[in-house]
Image 1 (cartoon, rainbow, N blue to C red):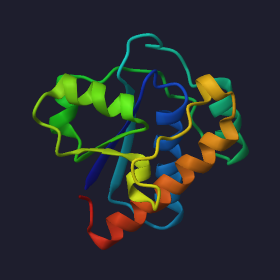
Image 2: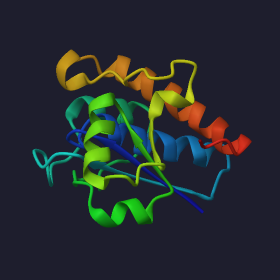
Image 3: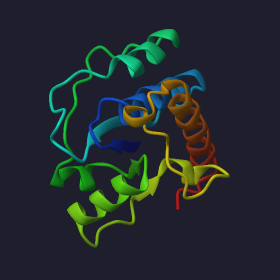
Image 4: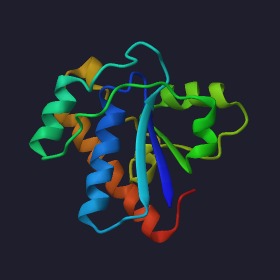
Length: 153
């Protein structure tokens, strides 16, 4: 079983989008040994549901996200998850500070694509949830291919 934790700043936009899109992609491809979750590096949105922009995208795709509430990363997450996937450079920096030297499980989502070192667009600032969706979709497709190849860094 491969357990993946997607992480962004507030856990209401990008990381829950990645959590549910990756889960849906795996289900549609018959991949049953991948578990996904998501969390925030900050405490700002704890307990809140996904942002309405993310909700609109997930509803359009027919993906149920209704149980999701924002949560913050915790010390146990590093041991519980096999991969910890940040959406941008700031997320990676914050997770590395939080977990210290133990950072070999931490990757950026778009590093699984041709756009290495690129950040997933943050719709909190851009307002463009469609752009974020395209980034997340590309990253999750690349991650699935990396899983299939056994090339997880």
